[in-house]
Image (tube, rainbow, N blue to C red):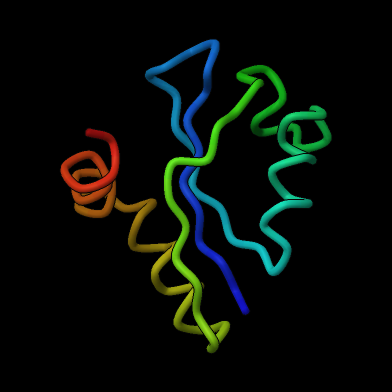
Length: 81
C-alpha cells in the first residue's frame, strides 16, 4: 500500500505537512526523530489523517493535489476541524 498522510505539528499548531510513504509508522517515527530536514524544526508531529492507495501513481497524484492551493483548502475544510 501507498499512504498519503497529513501531519500537524504539536509545538507549532499552524504547521501541517503532507507526505507519501509505504510505511506509515516508520515514516512518522522518522519525522519525530528529526531525520527529515523539512519537518525537523517543527517536531513533534501527530498524524491527522492518512489515505491508502494500491496504485502508487494514484497516491502521488493525491499527494500533489493536497499540496496545491485547492488541495490545502480541501484538507483545511475536511481534515483540520
